[in-house]
Image 1 (cartoon, helix red, strand yellow):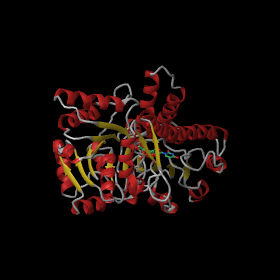
Image 2 (cartoon, rainbow, N blue to C red; image 1 turned 180 degrees about the vertical axis):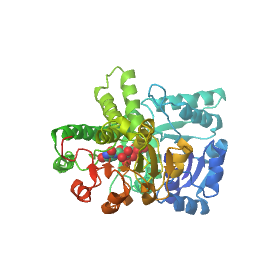
Image 3 (cartoon, rainbow, N blue to C red; image 1 turned 90 degrees about the vertical axis):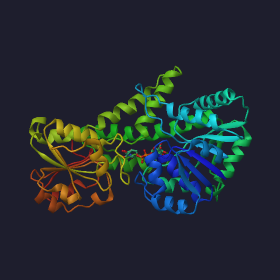
Length: 445
Ligand code: UGA
């Protein structure tokens, strides 16, 4: 089928590439000419495992093209995706200006019936606004062309985006017309083998499903972080508690890892946006506000552990800290809302210097913070340790999981390890002569 995708961010680029991979003829449109030019020349703006070769192969096969020409994109698509950003407004609501700008563009260039698909995470009721916007543009041109607006939220995870997109656990299609559902079923048929993954519903339910999924996951994390805070005070080991509850299938093993708080472009933004949706419809979002507040506090927890170890903020002045892991999670270079950012700022404010390493996010960190005297971006994990007093681990990249603790003990002047993701066994670390601080590992502080 002929597909047009507006927006070549995470969602648009990955979805477009995967649709081309299964044989569809895809044109991706973006207003960023430099990005489009780069993509046409095989330069992929994000780090995502498996994406680069897939983009190049499909581009070479002529099934995946990139353009800034919106009119050509609209002319091409039988199905047109809106996959542009919805950044938070000042009050936390999703800002729809980019989504509605695309809707206007579609309305201005539409010449034949089409199915328009909202792929971006958008507030309940957005499909109606998109429909009204397109209709107004058609009316202004004196045209009456039939079109559908469908909500088809994306559930991919950064770091596993290609895999999630190629093997989705569900495909939510929110549509008000059986014809539109049939079109999307045809589009997704290659992803829908073995058992039916399509969950068809009305538009508003689909829009809410996306927020409900992310808010539920964020709630699990904040819940565990709160239990960890309790565990820390009562002297319980949260890792035992986690295993003890995860074995109940109603609770499950996933997303119950306590840590340095959740970050990324989705959970923080979506929890806030859902709270605003609730507010706007007269529902007091009691739980969602708490989920966010717990997470905000948790992002400061590693620093609190450091302050406790050193016996006060002032003792951190002049220290040099090795920091492993800058990205908001492993397998991505994304630093949006990353817990490392809060910690960096707190350390700098306390007068400490940081030697930091991340396998993918060094460039992004440089872009965000620029050159500064109190930040050295290092080429390897061991390089980051040189001349430092303590180590803090913020992101659980695989390569940080089994360090040589004896080497750490001889390198870190203050012999202290702060483990924000519970990667290490306290006994093992301590046996090497290091002080160990994890998230609620069993000794009350
Ligand atoms: C999230 C959802 O997991 C996807 O299903 C969704 O499609 C996506 O948002 C989206 O809306 O686009 P993502 O933001 O890529 O995906 O990252 P996650 O893997 O969910 O991790 C989010 C954060 O939670 C990370 O900072 C991670 O370290 C943290 N986390 C995760 C924990 O602290 N504990 C856990 O047990 C799990």
